[in-house]
Image 1 (cartoon, rainbow, N blue to C red):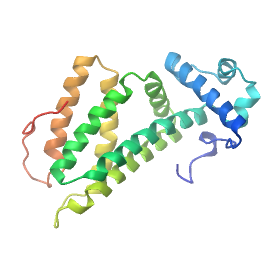
Image 2 (image 1 turned 180 degrees about the vertical axis):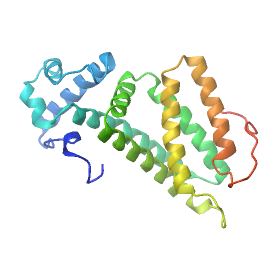
Image 3 (image 1 turned 90 degrees about the horizontal axis):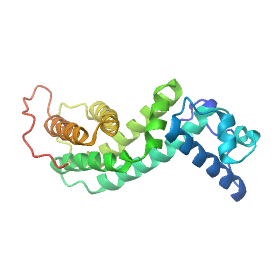
Length: 221
C-alpha cells in the first residue's frame, strides 16, 4: 500500500495483541460473508457489527468506514495473486516460456476465484470508489513489476517495446478479463479466456509494427 493511501481506506488502528487480531479476523470474516451475499454497497457497518457479534464501536475502532474493510479484504486477495505471480515467474527460461506462464496464470486466476463470491463483491466495491480503484491499479502494477523482474534476463537488446507500459496494461487487462469470465456462464468463460490467451501469445512481445497472426499457438486452457 502506498504511503499516500488515504486514511479513510486504511486501518484506523493496527491490531497487535492476539485478542484484537482475532476480533479483526471475526469482523472481516463476517464482512466477507455479507459482501458475498449482498455486495459492498448494501452492507452497513451496523449490520456488520451484528453479524460479527461485536459492538459497533469495535468495528469503528479498527475501520474508519466501510471502504477500509473493503481494502483489508482486497489486500488478502492481492497478496495471494502477488505471491503466486512471484512463484511462477521465478522460473522463467525464455520469452516463449514466459508467455506459457502468463497463460497458465490466467488459468490459475480463473480457477482460484471462480467460486469465491467475496472476491467479486470486493472487486466491484473497488470500482465504485476512486481511492479503492487506485489501490486496485497499484496491485496490477505490482504484478507487472514482478513479471518484468522475471523476464529481465531475456529482454532482447534493441527491442522497441515499452515493456513497462505494456506489462502494466496487460496486467490490468488480464485481471479485468478474468473477472468478466468469472461473471459469465462457464462454457462461454472458457471460450473467452481461450481467445484472450491467443491474443496474448500473438501480441505480448510483438515489436511495434510487426505483423502477427492471432491463433498461431494452441490454447492451454
